[in-house]
Amino acid sequence: MNTQPELLSLENLEVTFQRRRSDIVRAVKGISLTIAPGETLGLVGESGCGKTTLSRAILGLVPYRGSIRCKGEELDWKKQGKVLRQQMQLIFQDPYASLNPRFTVEQALEEPLKVHTALDRQARKQRVRESVSRVELPLHALGKYPHEFSGGQRQRVAIARALMLKPEFVIADEPVSALDISVQAHILNLLLDLKNEMNLTMLFISHDLSVVRHVADRVAVMQGGEIVEEGNCEQIMESPQHVYTRKLIDAVPRLDVALGKRS
Image 1 (cartoon, rainbow, N blue to C red):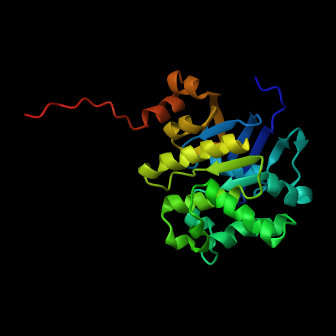
Image 2 (cartoon, helix red, strand yellow):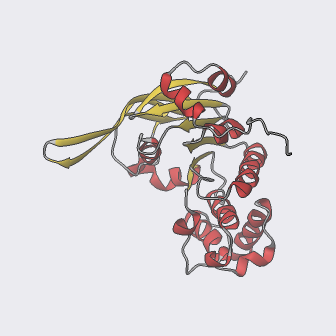
Image 3 (cartoon, rainbow, N blue to C red):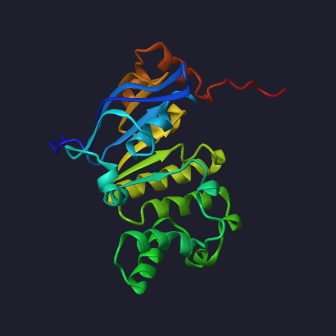
C-alpha cells in the first residue's frame, strides 16, 4: 500500500465561463480528487462533460476556484510557472495539430531542453536520441517533419516531447481517440511501459471505458461537470453504481455475437 502523500489533490474545484452577461456556464462543479504517486487515474465521460476543462485548470490554462495541490503545496502558476512546466506535461489528442509543422522531430524534442535546462548542445542531442529510442522510433526519424509520419508515429513523437523534461505528472487527453483501432493498442502499451520505466503519475482522459480499463488503476466517471462515480477499474466495470456509468459500459463495443454456421 502506498503511504506517500498524494502527488496531486483537487478540492472543490470549480471552473465557470461567462458567454454573455447573464449566461454563465459551470463547466466544472466542485470536484475533489486525489492521485497518488505512480498512479494512473482514468477520467471518463462523454464529450462536453468538462474533462479537458478540468485538465486545463490543473495546468493553469484557465482560471478556477478551489484548491489544487502538488505534494501538499498549493499550485501558483504565476510565480512558479517555469518550474511547474517541467514537472507537469500534457499529451494532446491530435498530434498533428500540437506539433509545429516547420520543426523537424529533432527540433521539436530539443526545444523544451533549450527553454528549461542548461544542458549543452551535445547533451541535448543525446537526450533527444534517447527519447526517440524510448518511444520506439528509428533515429533517422529525427530529420523528418510531422507530415511525413503516420498518426501513430506522430503520437509517439508527441509523447516523446511531453517526456523530454522527465516530468512527474502527465495528463494524457484522449491520446488514442484520433488513431486507428489497430494502432491504439500499441500506443496504450507504450504509455504503460513508459509509466513503469519512468514512474510516472498520470491523469488519462477518455470517453471510452474499455481504453481506460487497459491503462488506469482507478476510474472517475464525469457527467455534466461533476464526478458521479469513482473506484478501481474492476469495481467500476463489473459493478457500476450510477446509471450514467452503466450507459458508458453499454456503449462499449462487444464481440460476443454468436456466429451462425454456413450452409
